[in-house]
Picture: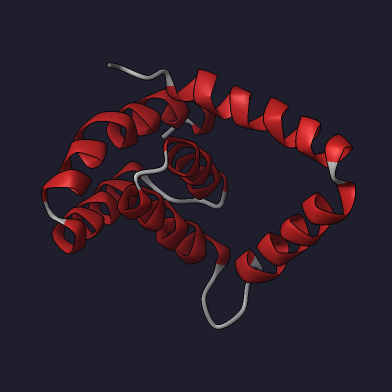
Length: 118
């Protein structure tokens, strides 16, 4: 089953809006945690987004993968940095991670690279 990264990203955005309306306190708390975790500190935001992308592969979460590939590009990541991120995630997670790295992760890179001219 091939998944369309842009459709997954759009579904996530729509779902996030629905959840924010359904449970605003929970959504706000989660969003604040994300902002805090991803803001520049000892690690820059790009590095943190690459870590999140790798963890998306490790968790086998379609939504996490496409969101953090997109956000990695937005934070300045290159295609090669993302591919190396997928390789590290695959190394740490073995065959199941290879399936996500070689399908949805690469499809998300191909889809979103054009948004950032990369």
